[in-house]
Image (cartoon, one colour):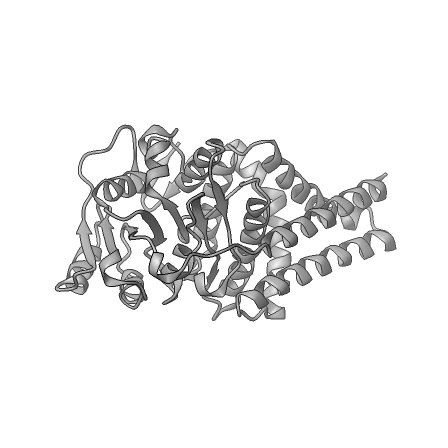
Length: 364
């Protein structure tokens, strides 16, 4: 019985992965450089004194027409030295604007409120967001903005992580895998997920859905906005696989912070639709079978496990090559072990306790 279940779920897992690969490699048309829209880049920073300088430096080096770009750095009530670092760096630099959120807009809290405040002040046609622990590529803004034909509402990009350690490399491979899934299904017309550290959207469509203040509260505000725009059924939402639009973030430094990150994403994912739960269920059952392998061991089950790992490797290798990134074997092996464990355990962690701790705040 175990082998029948394992064979069935591996077949589903394989065909799902093929779909992800096909979707992720879909190509999209671009507009001419002289038609690039005006943009507003927004970074919400809370207690980021260790990271914010590198982020600011990369934003300063962004290539984009100077008369079409503004950059808002929102200090979200930091209690460390974040404010001083921001203000010292941006002094005298016209493309940067400093902002502190005023009163809460509607029922908004935390990062969503910080973003909403900046969007209200923004003048760009397209809103770009990244995080304070990220470095954007010099071509990031031009690359994502070039996909904004008239019928496009949102363009997302890929994020990797600094992989100078095995712990960071493992997280980077995980990021790439999750974004391959997100991009693959999004490009086939079924958005399931996105990540706010490499995201852009048309301001007029943001206003059309009523802004963050009109959406239900979520610890993953980017997912809420994605689904609201998708439900309009009027615009394209795309996820081009391109090295020019790459953002690099810093990995979680400890297992504790990594678990908190995964739990936050897991709690946000509870608002997925049937298709989203189907993808999660396939991963859960596949990895649960692998964990149970010692209790139901057979040669066939072992071969199925090795086949699953090979499928993951070749899928990830293709994405890494497109992003001009190296897929190191040691990072991939660490990812596979970690991936098997957390996908099987995360549902139990999120369902039994939905309290989320993030940036010194607690959300329920």
